[in-house]
Length: 282
Image 1 (tube, rainbow, N blue to C red):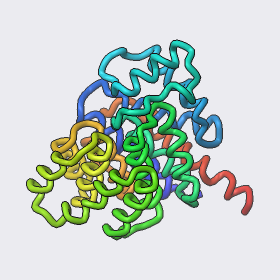
Image 2: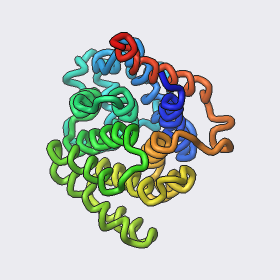
Image 3: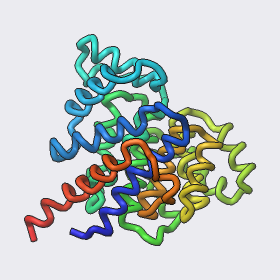
Image 4: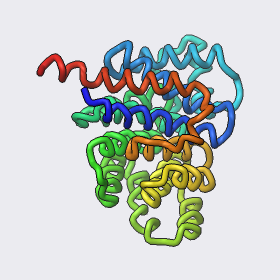
């Protein structure tokens, strides 16, 4: 096992948490991500039934306001006894599943063939609208790609995101494909163009990707641009992307982060879990 690779896992989770924290206190973006990590550690992979159970438990014992409307609707259905396979919303293109996709890309960092399948299964716990699913799948694939491609090629990252989104929802792939043009624009003009694009989830993914690809080596600049352009979930996703790629975060942003030690421990444990099988085979 290589501890330097574990640093990228930790930075991915911490990066998302920092973006979430900068976007506003009390959001559930980080909570949901950690629920997924804990489920993977316990179940040895993506288990939608287990994740649904854990999310419902989190919701029952947490706050009852400020949730993504789609997530709130799903939790209310689960709480009423609706099976998780039937509880998710089918027609709301919200971003509420996207921020918990990072662990899927990390889990499959050595071989990415199952990223799409697991990302869709995890998304379907709460979101079944094709736009929401396509955007989430794109984020998961990009995280997996960044783990093994340094230095990265910007065009390759866009291709990965667009290629993974289009089979799920063509329009979302089209939005992501426009990153090529957006990155050639001055930052203010690109921001205005992003805000004119259709669909909450596709735009959230595009904002996060644009912020990261515009400033790939500057975590703080990436997160702040995503926050100013798209808000807290965009910042959380952009932070996870930047953390995954850079493997290091500015200390002043991490110091005092709620549950920082827990997040670090989970990142290290997730990395160890991904190489257990490889170590046994060797």
